[in-house]
Length: 361
Image (cartoon, rainbow, N blue to C red; front, side, top):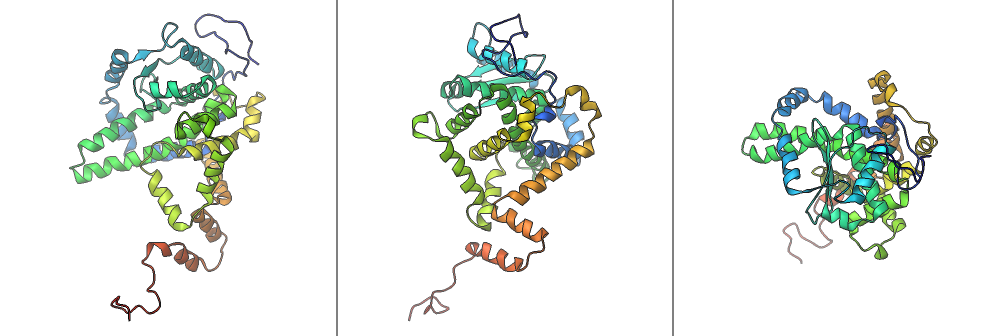
């Protein structure tokens, strides 16, 4: 347990209330298995390494830093001091030695991001600062520090650049297709990385209800007295289990252009992890260390991720995932079930008494 009431200088600052600290914690402790597997797949994407190396020299990182320095407010002991305290606390708890610069930018839309190739920087919007209370904001700051610790900022920066590039080369058919293929892969990875960062935010805040409230406010605004965490989580369950195969396809189409998972899904995933043995082991001080990262087998990590995917599919209530499970188990009448699931995409059959020409008798 971290000490309470003592304050050193610079980074040697303890959290403002008693919370556990995790010296030398590896990102493997909190990374979602899908985050790791998606990142492996991203790196195996044909031509990605070549494109990434080429883009590294083109990315306007210096320009971004100068932009935030000139047109935003840098968090420090003299500006947004309460955010500065949260940032130092988060870095102390997750044992991030170099505290990343943090800026507040004028934007009514609640948002936060961690970007940068050489050194990550954290940016939060005024809309987010005004929306969340102290403990909810602490989880957000921990979320962004988790991104920095995991190295997510690099790929987020590439994603932002490529998304802008895709708009400029949209008139080049093949060029745009190549860029969009990489953007799609990056978005899939980044959606999974958000689940990892949510876990890092919980490790920093160590208040699951505050994390839930923050996600709920991002979805529904500053009307906490009108909202209920349990009802919000019930939405996530209804979203996963409801509908038929048509809805399963629509869910996929809805999420493809997004860089973040849906808010109810994030809340449900975080609650499930908070109740897991993995989270409790970390809180008890049993977690992988960074010093062991070099000995970690990539193939073992991929197998663990694959097992997690299989478990998620098997336990999912989504109609399409249930169909996949049944297919793997050799269930019968799958063709009929598929036809029934997609019936809504076809025109309804003619009503009794209708003629082929459509005129009533």
